[in-house]
Amino acid sequence: MQQIIEMAKGFDWSPFWISLKTGIVATVICFFLGLFAARKVLKMGPKARAVVDGILTLPMVMAPTVAGFFLLLLFSLRRPIGAFLYEQMGIKVVQTWLGCIIAASVIAFPLMYRNARAAFEQVDPDLIYAARTLGMKERTIVVDGFSKSYAMTGWRLGWAMGPKELMRHICKIHQFGIMSAPTTAQFAGIEAIRTGDDDIARMRDQYDLRRRFLLGELRSMGLDCFEPEGAFYIFPSIESTGLSSEEFCERLLHEQEVAVIPGSAFGASGEGHVRISYSYSMKHLREACSRMRKFLENLKNEQK
Image (cartoon, rainbow, N blue to C red; front, side, top):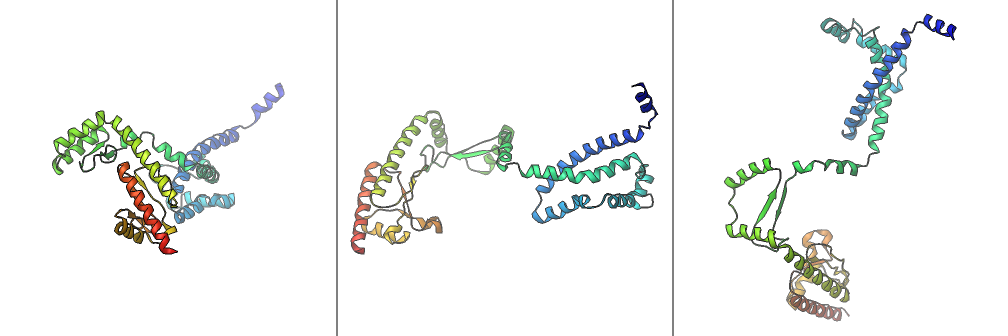
């Protein structure tokens, strides 16, 4: 054992310590630069990403001697960059420990960059979007009205909610730039917020009753219909009648005095459907369904 210790003392350990320090420093540099570069490259467009990716991974396909020769040319005291660093900052790169770090970082960087980019590409985008919502309270403004939630259509009353400091400036702009809502409407809105929850529950139950009634009636008439899960509209298909949505609505209006909206009014994909509102009393809905059933029966007799 004593002989081993004596032999170790006789070794020149400077190359080992230089290599160890160089490896540690180069690893730290490549770790942070690789993460930063990978994240930035992923945000680029396809063409720019391809060009930058090729440049950053170039040392991987180059022989180490070629990369070393390129660095010697770049940082030589006879070259502009090397001369500038030495004359203006007193920094010498060639044949120094700094040069070793730069060379090691250049060779190792593409490996860290590629691994970091592969890791980022495997991250589920939904997780990123979910993370972005954290802390959104301080950066969110909510704007809404009373028309749908409290059945206050025509009152033209709305509200906004956001960070206190931001809302203070919004109130200034609103106060001097827009006419305020009538006082009576404002008091009505306050009363709706304070005591309107029970009314909303009863209204929701009524809409559910009307929705289920109308859905059953339309399906019994032979009209295919998707069950709505929101608002107070239903969108049955009238393709089985052989009429366009506009023809169907016009004839139903003239022959049975029942008004519905053609699906084509909402775009080309709405053709072959009509929109029916069930924000009416059950009495009116029963009468409308009775007339609509009669219209469909007459239409079938015509087509025989």
